[in-house]
Image 1 (cartoon, rainbow, N blue to C red):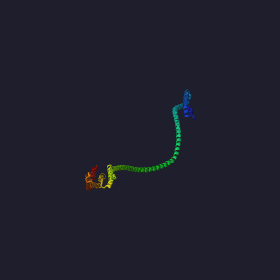
Image 2: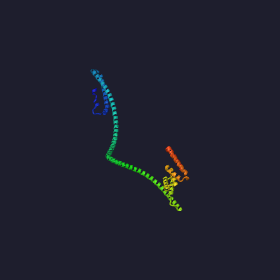
Image 3: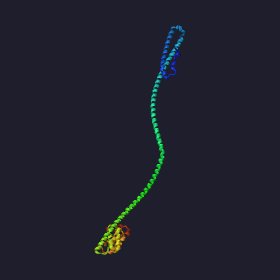
Image 4: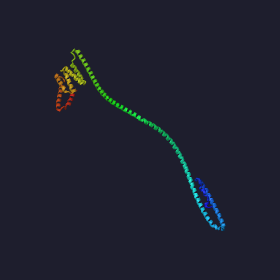
Length: 341
């Protein structure tokens, strides 16, 4: 059997997959080897027959040798083709293995994709729920956004009202503070006036009490001695003395002056009034005539030397004032105060 007579149609049947072709190739290789062996056997038998009939076939020996050479070439080609087929089978098996591994990887990837799709579907549902909630929230916010301008207008109106009220309150507060300050001033003035009134009332009460005692004393003396009516000069002198003891200098001065109006020659009233002018009013000019009148009325009295000393000091003070322009005024005043103490 020549190369052209070998059954090649089984190697490339149409309509078969690669896997089916890979399963058929070993069978084809066995058939090819079997046919090659048969061919070789037949070739050997032909050689024996050719040798035994050498003489008969001498004319065809050259053709047989040519055919043998062709058969060897065909066998060599078959061996090469068988080797190529073996390599193809190995490649096909490697490819099948790679395809199986790819299919497994594809199935794994498919499982992962299915799990991922499931997860994505779950997340999609969650997102749809969240989207629905967001839409509801957006709707509520849109409603609130519509209500906010009205609320803002109301708040602004209320703020304006509050500002106006606050301004009026501040004005009222300022007015109340001014009124309170004025009232405090008036209260302080009233307190001062009340204290002065109390002091005046107290002094008047004391004065009334002293007058009452003086009148009682005068009446008692009049009744006891059957004297003439009360001596007003003596009465005012006694009042002036009491006022001086209580540091009521104005009242004392007025009382002594009243006594002198009733009796201008009352020496004791001149003496006390002069001492009052010097010690309490610091009025030497007013005290000087009363001191001199006292010396005229009582030239040999016990206080005569004191009165002379006061007049001497006053004269020295006047001279010192002329010379030093009032430098020693305070010293003389202090000296007089020490004398009167």
